[in-house]
Length: 303
Length: 141
Image 1 (cartoon, rainbow over the protein chains, first blue to last red):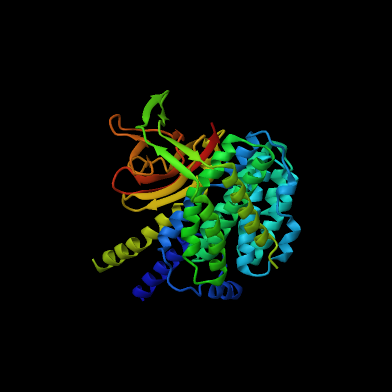
Image 2 (cartoon, each protein chain N blue to C red; image 1 turned 60 degrees about the vertical axis):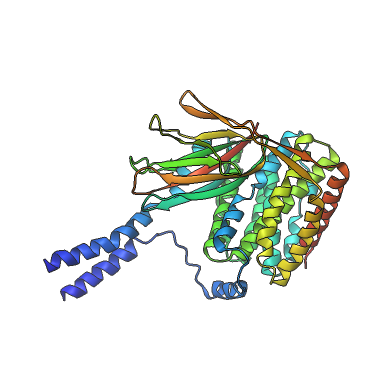
């Protein structure tokens, strides 16, 4: 009898102390999706390295900020129309397209176009629901925030954190394939936007930032090629390698100088003396723009 | 004696789960996001460890931007988060902990002038590990 009491206490307390935020996603639908996604052979890189690389990729907000601060006006024609969302039928198409829309949202949010943001978030939510990861987008909350012009920075924060949580969830659930496609789509869209803007209005900061994506592309290729046994990833890998062939002509020179640190009013201030200098010709930029545009067109017009 | 042993067993089994349940990264995020001030939020690196180890995160920093790293922890002495920033060659750039003065900086602002992969090594002072979030934000120089 005493043993039964102890077992009951242990069981009860274990259940009580579990994380109450676990969502019940272990439905039959989820299991069938997982079965489809995890039909993988051994990865060329470890899961840990995969997670490290995915986390290290720059946010689309960085290029979007650069675009906005160049003085260029917001141009909705650059974006992937929300109507295209109906074209994406497979999970891989959807994940890649969701990445594209994520890149668009970075651009939209930085320009504080709240009405457009709501529309695009609605599209993202719809695709995410199809992929059984829609729980990270609370559209009603987002609409309330967007309706208050003083809280537009909160809209940006909520959008960013929603994607962050969704990406983390995908990797925790061993659905890294979709996470890879999501971040690849986001990166492609960011660079596409930068190349389109620079084509319309030359800007040194954007020019250099496009050239520096050579570093990021190498990281993206590592994670995409890890799944090249999958025909979809193999095709994407080949397209990205065409882009790499062009980026191989771009050079980035790194000059290291010891940084300095000082304390100012109790805060740590660092002075970075190292530099990177990019060398990219207008012809190389043109070629990069053309290849990115083609890859993007293939993705957004998938059916 | 048997009763005490059994009770000890129960407690020893439960405490680790209870500790994990209390390390709610989302709560840290919501509480610390305001410290970003004028910086735009990029990422949150959730960290939880029962004994002090180090975990490393990487991110591509771009020249022309200043990155703000904010260690956000429980505020408990002996379980304070420390973030060490390293460059592409794993040379230490700066740390949020001043060993000489034994003080913790609230954040670390790094104006980047050389694009590349940078590494943030997260650990906790003391030997008992800790729980928290390392926030990363940016703004254009």
